[in-house]
Image 1 (cartoon, one colour):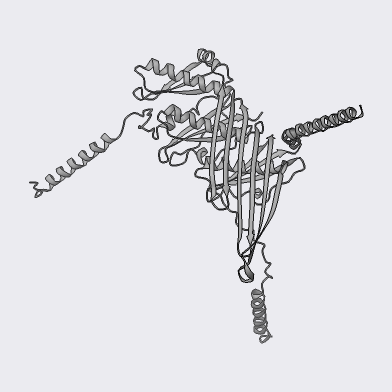
Image 2 (image 1 turned 180 degrees about the horizontal axis):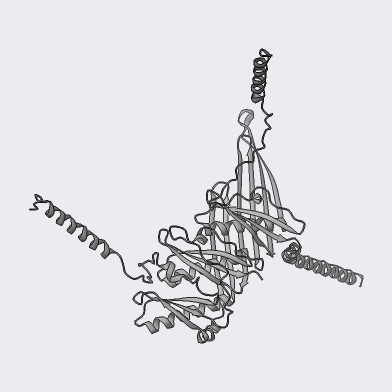
Length: 277
Length: 193
């Protein structure tokens, strides 16, 4: 039974309660930012892990899932890095879209599909020349490597990120105008592996660039049917339309400037560019 | 003289009061309507309401609002490209059907039913190149507007690609005609012999 007759005892009890509560809350915080995959989602620290703003535009990022030792993770991450460079150098992207709508049902269907072809043969030579600059993340949950490609000019980055008060990059909500470049933002839901989620977001950015690029060729087919039926006491009108479009283009110099994960919407975002000329 | 001073003061004050009350005629100000702001803090661009026109370029706008911004952008782009495609080449097929039915027996039971049906089908099939996205605006509801342009000289390429099939068909029809003509000549020659 607590006895609070004496003020100093009450003070001691309150102090103990405050210290206990502080310890409890400190225990909830994690000391190190990990590179989570799957169910462990990257939180705010992803901004720091994925931020390449301090590096020139010949620096790339590669991600590895957790493996039994760090060397294997670095090797895997460097392979992903080389793959990103190969895709960026030249990728043939095809984006298809079908959509149908009618006056009675509104939007009946909307579906899109995209594919990209890149030269896998080049990855080996890219891998051999990569210069490893930095290894980031927590080895228990996978790592990120930052590497430079000496074959690409170390030009300054054409855009550096701005962040809102909540830490959200401004480019997520408004695609920035970067002179001399076609810019797009890609987004993807989370997949089981972080590398897949990030690559899916990169890929939708590439698709968006093809759809707005003057170098792409779009095959467009469409139909629209208007039907009117009248009898002496009824009048019926119906409209239905459908489109099929396939945009194809080759992206050269595709580069992902920034990536971000939104934990509230569980979405991955990528900001990518391609030189206009 | 002393009587004159207060009168002058009163008159001067009265004049000042009257002048003070007079106001400049109010010019009706042509107030510019407040710009419509979008979801990203950008004012509505003029091209949303009025599609630009240039001698060398054809412009079209597209709009879509789907479940997320990425899909809305895709659909809006497709919408604008569809308009360009229709502008380049559209084939319209129409059919009008009039049904008449007269049934029943006797003067009282006999009925006539008439129906009119009109079906109009538009088909567009083109290959577009050089289409650029000139602008994009997200309205307050999250709907995406895009402005696309295409060099007018590219319409010829699009038309050529689309009409290639037609030309091939025409060539085939000509060949068929020549073949029939040759057969007819052969038949005539055989008959004479």
